[in-house]
Length: 173
Image 1 (spheres, one colour):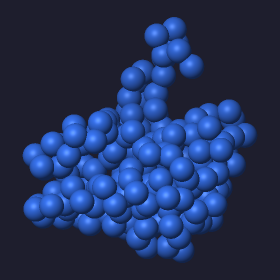
Image 2 (cartoon, one colour; image 1 turned 90 degrees about the vertical axis):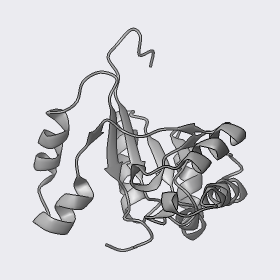
Image 3 (cartoon, one colour; image 1 turned 180 degrees about the vertical axis):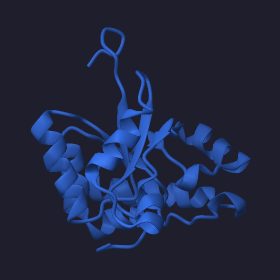
Image 4 (tube, helix red, strand yellow; image 1 turned 90 degrees about the horizontal axis):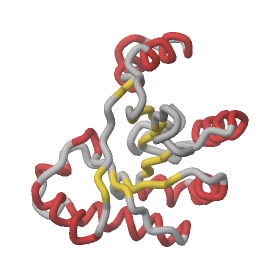
């Protein structure tokens, strides 16, 4: 939609694809006619190639979230190579080279930013987080209503919402 005419927010999902969760999210989004951006990990795209292709076929955006999702990537010299590997892995499976990049855990370094500029990748972070991974890890399994209330209390037009359809390279959790 034209966000200049109506208030818009962006839904984003990190760390996938991760089945069965990514497909369940896609089914829900499609049932409401909602589009989202999925920041996928290259290794996970290789693990679930059909799901990665479905994200694109369903009209969603697929962004790069590195190849291996190393939590300390920004501290490691040459970490930009993991971004490049993510690009290559996603392209090999989907035929699409992402234009958007989200750094794992929001961490970034000067050499990564230089690499993004060189590769014409746009870095995208977030402005609203439901803290879904934190809640699952420390609070048990809060209800969907709790997540929804947490997000809605922070949402205003123009915000980018961070959610997860996976948890790094862990699967089946």
